[in-house]
Amino acid sequence: MPLLLVLACARTLTPVEQPSAEPRTGRDDVLSALQPRLERNQLGGVLSTLLSSLSFALDAITPEGARRLSGELGYSDFKLELVDGTQVGGIFFECTDGPPGPKPLLMASFGLLQDRWGTESAKFHALYLKKPDERIGAHVLILDHPTGGSFYANNGHLSVGAYDDGRMWIEVARHLDSQMDLSGIHLLGVSMSGQTVVHALIEDDRLGARLFDSGMAVSIAPDFREAPGRQFADLPTRSGVENTWKPGLSEPPGRIFALGMQSAGLGLLVARLFVPSYRAVRPPAELEIDRKDLAVFFREAFEARITFLRTQSRANWNPDFSLDDLQAFMTTTRIAAVIDRVRTPLVLVSARDDPAVHRALFEEVVLSAGDNMWIAAHETLRGGHFGFHVSYGTNYLGNVARLMMMPEILENWNEALKRRSPPNRKENIPIR
Image 1: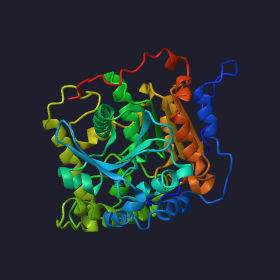
Image 2: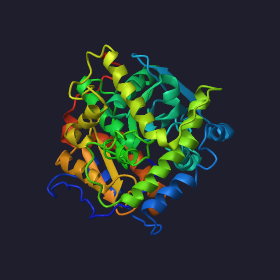
Image 3: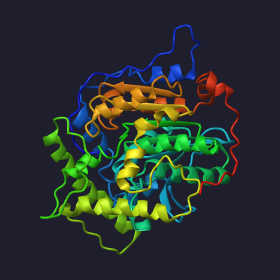
Image 4: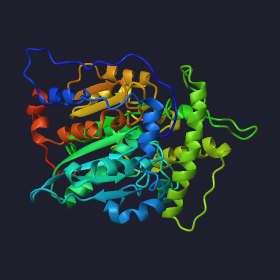
């Protein structure tokens, strides 16, 4: 949830270390890379989030800006209709560098209201795709988050993501795996899309599809009820209209002023990104949403997705995740309740000063993961909400991502990974 402002502070989480008698593994190498080597400046929290979101994206925060940069960005549009009729979209960057042969695919998404035209998509391109000598050596697919205006324009409802979005990613990955010669498929999710990564890895394993080789959940928002649900709950409504995001929330941890700033940021993202993205997909459609209607609008759009999913023939839908209503879905898909099921190499990295998601939520996830050695978790001192390059340089997350796509790192992650049967990448297992 970039640009949403909150104050966050507390002690630093310490990842569980391997016993000294154990041989060094790929997981150890990743944990080492998660320890920042260089602090560029003392900026953190709100400032690092704002600077990181705006400095690369001022000209590409709207579809019009993205089209002006299309020649420089070098992308192609991606569209796919899923088995239940859901329309997903994004942009695809083909990797033509290096020797011929199979290359990895990195699937990425950047959270609440973010889509192919969003600030975070433009930032990721500027940091990791634009310069040939710094480019990540993989095909990159940036997917619209299902809270984005383009998803709403295509489908008439919105998804909060989580398990639902994870199922979408599995279908997308299966499609691309059948069309391309890939050496592996890796996932990157920021904020709400961090939820998607975790659920996609777990569901991929449950289905036996074995599509995904690794995942990274960065600045994860692990519980939609609390974030961004709390920000929706702080939005004003018209006289006599109840804000239905409020029931069930815990007491805010002393951040009332900052929550107000977050709500203003939400309004800005809707006006500058959500509405233009909708219009770009459905020209010349008009869409205007008054700030006093935002809370109700999004609640109804999310509830419509739950209703839609209930009407589908989803015999293979995991019954652990309720479709009774939106509140039940948000409750059952919260990451702390499922993180122990991960059986694919996964990085969790968040900043102590994250201004959008209170660090207690990240702490809960790490504690729930316990001694799950498939997970490498680390909390930095600074970095805001996906603003780590401001504090630690552009190579910080880039180096971690490169490690997570190296076969030798993943093969040596731990003994459990070595014993895992080789994936059948072309296996066609239905997910309906």
